Length: 162
Image (tube, rainbow, N blue to C red; front, top):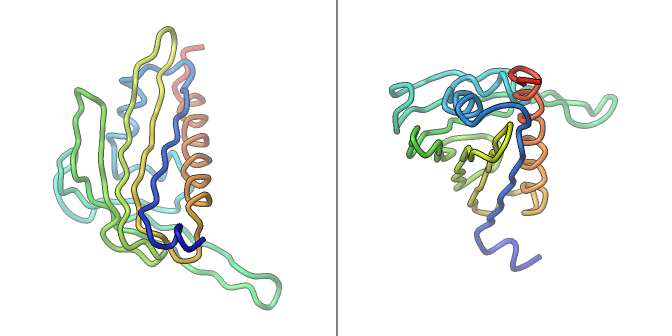
């Protein structure tokens, strides 16, 4: 546990998107300010920069209920995320969390869409983060993995050629 609190956390998840080409999956990721359509967020919108360009900043937020019964509280968890690099040819996007109320000090993620043989593609989500208070590295990896799985299912449902 001591080691986990000092070093950078790194993780990578990959999911196959069946029946959806790489171009279609890339269009979803490239639409940086509409990610709330594909993952569990209440809202996501542009706050600065130019769509599709490095420097673009989005605001993402969700309402979270914590506790039980009379101890239950409702909080809005939010983050501002900035595109550091975007390459439509390689279908790759890197962003960082620049402000948030979730305990992230440094978080950089890279999303890639990779073509595969046959009918589909793969989406890869890698991250490097400072330790996050209230999380474990494995907990963050599990969150990324489950979010990516959910996103893939929604993309498949919306765009499947089957």
